[in-house]
Every structure is written in structure tokens, then in C-alpha cells.
Amino acid sequence: MEVTVRKATENDFENVYPLFEQLWPDKKLDKVALEIVFNRGVNSNTDELFCLDYSNEVIGFCAYAIVNNLWQAGYISYMYAMVVDEKQRGKGYGTMLIKESLKDSRDKGLKRMELDSGFQREKAHEFYKKLGFEKRAFLFSYPLE
Amino acid sequence: MIRKFEYSDKSSIQRLFELLTDSKISDSDLMNRLDFIKNSTIDSLYVYVLNDSVIALLGFRVRENIEENSRYGEISALVVDSDYQKQGIGKQLMEFADQIACDFNCKGTWLVSGFGREEKAHPFYKSFGYVSTGYRFVKQ
Image 1 (tube, rainbow over the protein chains, first blue to last red):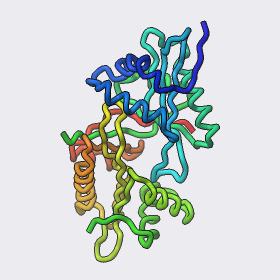
Image 2 (image 1 turned 90 degrees about the vertical axis):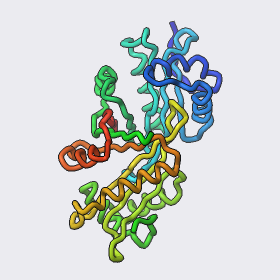
Image 3 (image 1 turned 45 degrees about the vertical axis):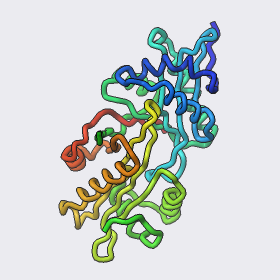
Image 4 (image 1 turned 30 degrees about the horizontal axis):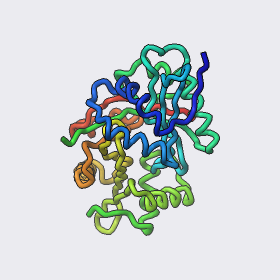
């Protein structure tokens, strides 16, 4: 079976949406709004979205944004979504997605990659550690509503 | 008084930033960061002025949430001069950040706090109702 990682297009949204449902199972997703955000990412110069195809089916997705902030004088890669179909996990597909994103980021001259991950995603943390990511900080959140 | 930064605040900002990161920041590096803020549509940097001196700063960013087409405010930097800590200035800046978040229709605010700040910073954030939710991962 052929496995490929490629850049996403607007046409991929329908196939990626079920993966978003797996990524954020506790959130009530607004499909229309999410498609707007997805297409904005596909068409943006500062975002890169990737699909992993397994015999013509999209079974993995990740996306990063090129960002700058006060903390570093220079641009970095911020991965804001990363998911592999739950039936296909543990087979190295996530590693393929991350490695392709890292290569793409380095080709653009980005200094490093950052990502945020909730405490409950313990398996993901192991996965990121294996790929050379280091835990550096805590996230704090405060809902206004 | 809390106001947006100006380039004339440069040396005070440099000093506060060095206090925050515990490392030297070159003039050119600082100028890059200030230019970045000036040109960014989602970032802002505020200074707290007392008797004509800048004694604290607050960085704020508006972040679009991918999963629900909504916004969150991010406190991207917060530092108070060591001589003026524990006088409620940080609290005023946190409340100011809440206000900006409301103005931008943010659903909430969030922040990233580096390992090593657990003792001092975390109880401060928790006192405002912040809850820690996860980790920031970095690969060089």
C-alpha cells in the first residue's frame, strides 16, 4: 500500500473533518466555521497543512503556522493540529507527518517547532518525546464566559 | 498609567525583558522585537508608567482558535520591576489584559509559563482563576 504525505487543498476538508472529530472529541464542532478556518489555512502564506494518504484515503493530518512572538527575534513553526485516525495509530504515520513538517519548516529557515498538548494526551506526549521534543512550560487557561 | 509602548521606552523595556528572561538582549534583537510588535495586527505591548518611569510590561496577543472559529487572548509577557513587585501592579496588568480580551470578543485568555516559575508565578495566575491545562513542547 502506498503511503504519502502531501500538502492539503480545500478539497480535503470533507475527508479531514472526521479526524478533527477524533482530535477534539469533547468539543461540539461547528463544521461550517471549521471549514472556513481550514480554507483560510490552506490559502495562507503563513500556514502549512499536510495530509497523509494511505491508498487514496486521508488517515492523518497536521498543520503548522509560521509565527513570531516577543520571546524570539525570528520566526518559528507552531504546530496547531496533529491527528492520525485512531484505527491506524502506532504504525509510524504520525512520525511521517511530523518529520515532513519539520523538514518543510527547516527548508523555510524556521528555527524551531513548538506545540501545545493537554495533560490528558499522555500517549501523544510519549510520541513527541521520542521525536526529540522537550517539555518546556505549562499552559494556563482562563475562560471569560 | 498603562499605555501602549513607544520606541522611547526602549531601554526600560530592555531591562524588564532581561529580568523576565534572565539573559542579555542585544539592542538589535530588541529593535527586531519592537518592530515585530508594531507591525503585527494581533500583538500589542503595554507599559506601566509610575512617576515617569516604566516599571512593568504586558504583552498581549489575540489568537484564533482553529477548532471553533473563536478567539482567545494570550498574555505573551508579564513582568514587574523587582523593586515594585508585590504592590498590586501585576494584578492591575492582569485585569487590564482581561479588559482587552473582552474588547476583542475573546472567549478566554491563556498563557504559557516556563518550567522553573512554579513557585512564584503559578500561585499568582491561579489566584485569578487560571487553571493549568497542559504542556508546551519544543524541538530545536
